[in-house]
Image (cartoon, rainbow, N blue to C red):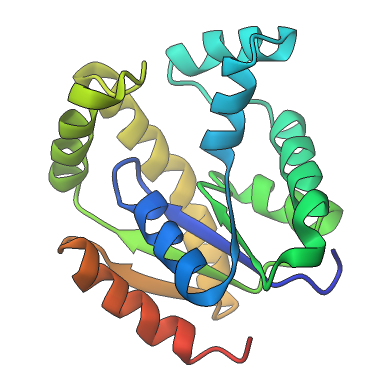
Length: 191
């Protein structure tokens, strides 16, 4: 994985990360790895680890780093041959996660940061909660998730900004408007 192109995709809950990642996969042939999806798959499997994760996620707390890193690394190794690069969605949530990933898995090529107001994210999540059945799409948990996101992710953005690795995407608009911004960035990279 040493030469892998790794894009950290950062944005609050409901910022549209997953939707945009799907479009990047389609257009650029990257592999989308969502820590959230990997964790939800583990929960759905009913494994012992899955049961522990359920309790943590219900409270809106963060899953232990060793667990997340192991799951990401396994998923990347499994797809390394067929991928132009990796979109690591919803990771790192805090600076230590990014540093450990770079030390133990692969270097970060750049960070896509989807910047959205709390109001917009809350509105999108409540909308999604009507149909998603996700345990963490309710108003009380949303408030906590947004607060956690801002407190823990700001140092990540600051750190990678100092290395000139952050693409700041204004993500208030429609899916297509946001993807236009994403394409401007992606097309300027020397993948």
